[in-house]
Length: 336
Image (tube, rainbow, N blue to C red; front, side, top):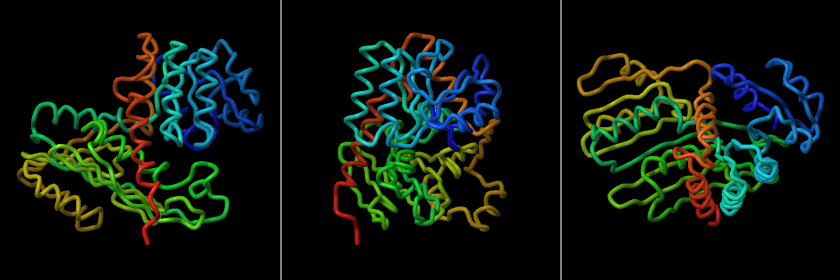
């Protein structure tokens, strides 16, 4: 459902997944649906939602429409008995995630947020290093995800009706990955800076845990290094930028040196230093074909075939928890 940029990337990556194919495409514009389907084979096209969801050839639905449509379309798919993968943010309110979860449980079908970064090989490697105790207990997580976008009229990034704002578009990534590693925080705080349309141009989050803290940020005001740092008591892991589609992981024996690398960003000096072999630093390559969306598709397919209604890697409870943190911060007056 949907024919925008992320839908195109997902459809392209499906070609990398054995036993997966694009069966049908839905758009409010039949012409757009037909043009989209023509790029990826011979999928049936629909401009009628009910007819699309009634198609027996559709075994699962990927919702890739604008943010404000996700909940209604996910619930319609679930009501039709179709497993559903819902593009991030799964909803604009945490309570709506609970509606999706309850509907999926009652109907007995699978539902998951498409926070695809959780399923990347580099993330799996990072989790394996942590589980093996190679960096000791996590004491701090730091991440920023920022891409500059001009505040132009009609931009979806800044449209409050369409669910715009940096936190919904970008902030969910570092928040979700942090909860994936550390669980829900004991307390969450932060601040946000207002764009001209009233949505957040930049948001900053601080999550407090017993013995650990996460300092996360996102924004449309600049393009950043977009790295994700996991500091332990005995070492550190650095997901190289852009971490939301990380293909490189650097393992540090000294968390202090990892922090220095993180703070240097991605300038020329950093690139030169990265080429020099250093003791206590190991670079791991976790490259993959495509854009990386195939891994979440594989995980969803496996769960659906197993008769599951939720994902252990991307549970809906954590999708709701991420949105509660966003709600907590955005409920405050904007920073000056």
